[in-house]
Length: 484
Ligand code: AMP
Image (cartoon, rainbow, N blue to C red; front, side):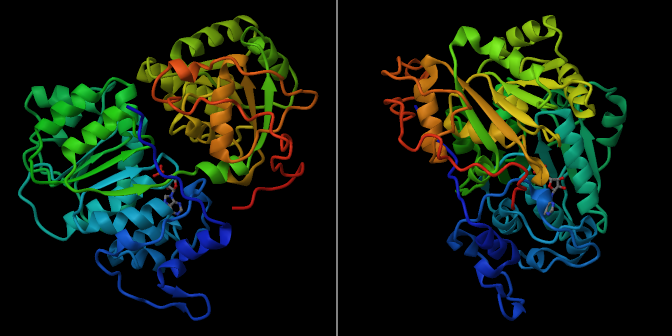
């Protein structure tokens, strides 16, 4: 079965402004300003699609001002005040779509990755719904997220957004002593943010009572799958009450996650946001046709120049990532590796070194790289083309953040040509060849996608990289700034 995909939506900057200010919903008149229309229940389904954005934080801050576009979503004054303190002026697309659904108590299936503002999209409705009514449960809402970093980040955001409410919350994750967590679970809690492993441990010791959970959020579901957490997640879900609100967030929808979603969501509203296409257009992209055996030598040659100051190198497999890491380290490069088989500690060390600038090159697989929000990445290198075309835009979105210039270098070996064709079809333009490169002639050999199942199924076809438009793919002039 082919993995179902998130729908991509893309709007021009003016349209994005219209959505983010509320104009597109008829809430703001371009001439008369904010019209203070009440939010209409149920209207979320009928809205035109929201635009893609690159990073939520690119939006302009407005300290101390109550953000009217958030008010239009139906958020309470105390939350609006906190959002004003945060400098959030406009909801991001995932927030604009998900918050009204969350506030109405409906189930949600959202395709959105870290960086889209998804945390506020689920935390704000939780805070508002639970602060408005007393509850009986020991734990009233539960957010399950795969990593300790994400758990602390979510808890930190919930504290910030809930600063004018009196909500009781705690965060549960492994790698630290369990005693303080067990102690916190003795009281009544409005919100628990947890990683699955430690929560299961505490459940087995009877420190956790999930029977009163009213709202359950499953965050980064595809990453849970990749990290092997799905059995734990299922056990936790089995301990929740049947009647509850469930919000599921995932950047992609592989079949296992669609299956899980079908089982745990009741008549969910679907929302899809990805920073994809906008991002792809904002990054300078080049393509090298290179034999598989020559890829490492080419990478090392590129790394030897001084243009690449901080790079993520993507491989298709965990094993490929490890192999490349060993080779590059042996050849004297500052390099680290991150993938789903690495322990939490190893991932944190790798990321820490990369963030601080100690490590110049981070080798990563697709899902492990999700949520890496590091500024100043000068280059993304696609050492292998991704199995799923959409991942290309997620990958290259790691560079050129916050208006900085970024570049994406893609290697394509002969067996990957149909994957390249998939990517080029997806981004709707050919990737320009690197200077001095010539498009190979002759038919492409059968690609990895044709034997690999879902990703390439039915989409192999001949590569269109011979396109007469080759090289005409849009590139910004050197020194140009990205416009948001
Ligand atoms: P997330 O995808 O939830 O991890 O959020 C990514 C970043 O965007 C975080 O640093 C948030 O604080 C920030 N953010 C979330 N929503 C908004 C907003 N509406 N305006 C500005 N920044 C935001």
